[in-house]
Length: 295
Image 1 (cartoon, rainbow, N blue to C red):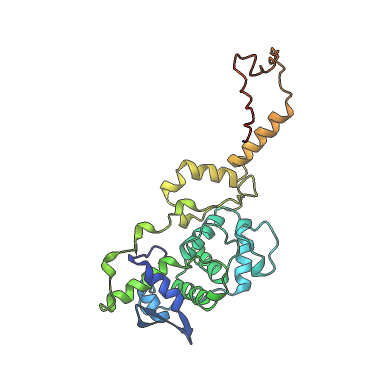
Image 2: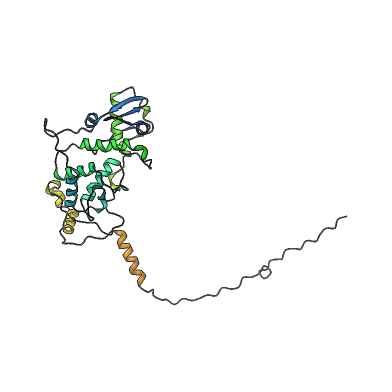
């Protein structure tokens, strides 16, 4: 569900968010004047999410209090009393990275989202425990919230661009009358933002925070034998000291160099010669003009 995407005209993406309205438990919108209705069942169908075992319901979602206990268990550098106290940058690694991936997949943004909504925390809970929860419902709840409060946003950035494309593609396939516009000004899969821009370390911290070991279910032999995992394991177990960020090393080097007095080297001072006048340079002075008497 986090990797679904499609190729659709950009104008339809803009039209969706301009026309989308919440009606009871559904979202009504238009694509090139064609009315469409989106609900949870259709949303789950287009995301291809279903229970792993037929006729077995999804697991119950944890409550907010259970989520707070779960986040305290993962490690948070500040006290947590309410969900609004949770800051993604205060989580220990690797959970900060997991949270950044969830925010990136849902919103398409890599920074500027420090808070953690209940639905996003429940996703992290499901990933950690490997429990078959209704991820489509959690994504849908957050999607409906964005539609309901779209006019209160100060930013013009489009939320959920990946899922917006999937919704438009779903209805374009089922409604052939919607024009394809000769594939002009389309938003293709290659235009999706890559994950290489995710920031997992706060710019206000000099080192990463290590506080937990990845569960054995979330790793493989290749991961456990990799150099990066061995370095992380050593830092998490306290056997090694985390390396500071490059910016911190640069600042430390600059401060050290500033305390060292510079070495004095003898220099030869050359006195500048006085500037020559125009007459001394051999140039002729300008001729004085004589006034012309009027007759």
